[in-house]
Image (cartoon, rainbow, N blue to C red; front, side):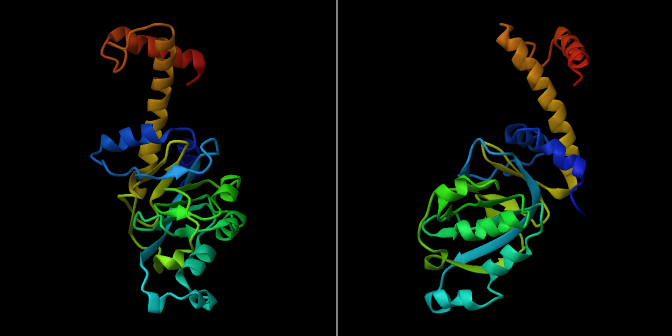
Length: 238
């Protein structure tokens, strides 16, 4: 089922930290992709449904540079098949010794309207990619071609990326801190809860900056905190 546009917009307004807490309340502890960082921490938020590519360790006799002449090569085909609005997520086995992709492939994704790209490996041409409009996340820069270490093998299958399980169609959200994966079936309710949590945390932040103690406020165990929050919401149309 396609991601609801209203849910997409809500997820653009909340942090991955807040989303992780909402997921943790439901017993989901491993949805944050580990050791993956934005190339442009001040870039736009990333939200989209996961479209995946899986690498395995390269076997040299099956992975010469001539494989790119094959129009059905999984890496090339995945770049052309990833739907507009989706997030391209690559399982590079947490191995950044060789690039998962470079600026030309990322440019193609960007031109096609893909919402972002994530790998638990590295990108080559990373300084160039950092200036692109498309959000991009990786472990670290990596100049060698992917063929030296990785062999593209599967498109749009369940993968692991930075120790997080990613199923095709899961909702992938990225911000300046990192990337979290939301199971598709609960994306709407997680988005709604995160918006509510964000409103409360904005209120708390304002109160703490004024000198208020967090005791009884965060969490709101005092009735005064709940009353003050209700008044704040009304005054701020939140």
